[in-house]
Image (cartoon, rainbow over all chains, first blue to last red; front, side, top):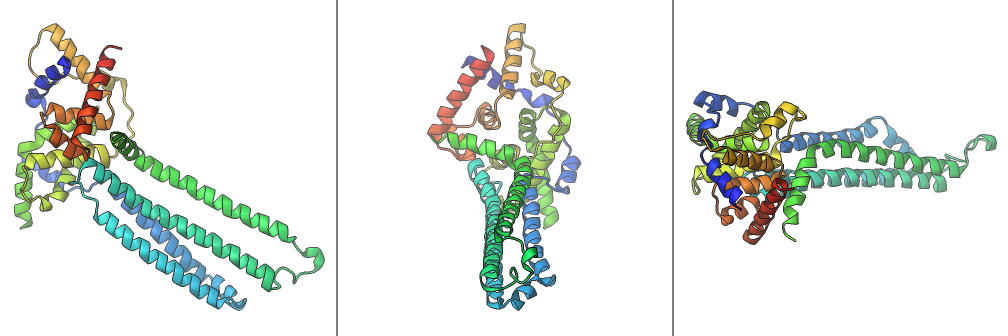
Amino acid sequence: MDELELLKKDWQKQEDTLPKLSYDDIYKMILKKSSSIVKWIFIISILEFILWISFDIGVRVSGKYEEIEVMGMEGFSIISSIISYGIFLYFIIRFYYNFKNIRVTDSAKILMQNIIKTRKTVKYYVWVNLSVLAFLMMSTMIYMLLYTDVFSNEAVDQQVPIVVVVVSFIITTVVIIILLALIYRLIYGILTRRLKKNYEELKKLEV
Amino acid sequence: MEKELEHSFVTNLEQNQNIVHKICRLYTNDSESHNDLFQEITIQLWKAYPKFRGDSKFSTWMYRVSLNTAITLYRKSKRSIKTSDLETLSFKISAEEYDDAVEQQLTLMYSAVKQLNDIEKALVFLYLEDKSYKEIAETMGISEVNARVKMNRVKTKLKKILNP
């Protein structure tokens, strides 16, 4: 293509019209902080980990676990703690290694892959936590319905029909999940839209 | 030790800053964004510098880190493109004087390149910088064959933009 060759010639002559920064200008720049998307993903991910851990601690401090223990479910609560901290540990270690793997000196494709991987680790962490939470709430509810008299203690005319309890519970869970998914799409959508688009573009080349 | 590293880095970058400016010129449309991107590229280069062993040329290493920053790490500011920026899209970059026909052709070419997507721009940039397909492929993380195929597609696309 002749035009491109013409462009190439002109391109290589542009030196004179480029800005010139002095030694001091550049020196000042290296003292500043990065605002790259990796940094943002890192900050938001750490906040997510903190959010879930404080949620867990909050439940413990507020005495909700004691209520469960009173109902004769201590074993249940111990197992759930072990599971949730095990999950946390696994994900934080993976997150750390993924993050360590992000190197700006890799090829564009590998760099993009590694960033997306890091992001996905935290995404899975949140979804696993949500599922565990939903599962625990569900099994607590079933346990209470079948083996305790929490629901049948009240006078007959004040009793809420079990169907209503179950349905409202499921609706609450679904609403929480949808809300969370929306917040996610918003935060990471804004952050990674361009990255994802460019990654898809590069991947298309392989077909 | 740190001071020495700083000094060698800043000196190296000062000498090779044209590479970064050219990338900024291709990926941004106003001087403020140009400076933003230059700043981010400088930080990324500096962060990666301690691991730069000198087994490749400083400039080769710079191409990779700078392009990665432009197409992957940099977060474009929300500033929308103003009409005044659109006019500078077809910037004339060399100080050279050409006859009108060539001049016009160049202007059209530059504005066509500006309309490409980030990945296509990267390919064109490396091509204009006279890099081999092997180097283009390595920088982007694709095979050499794919780099050639894609470059041909970009040429076709440019032709279409020029002669709609």
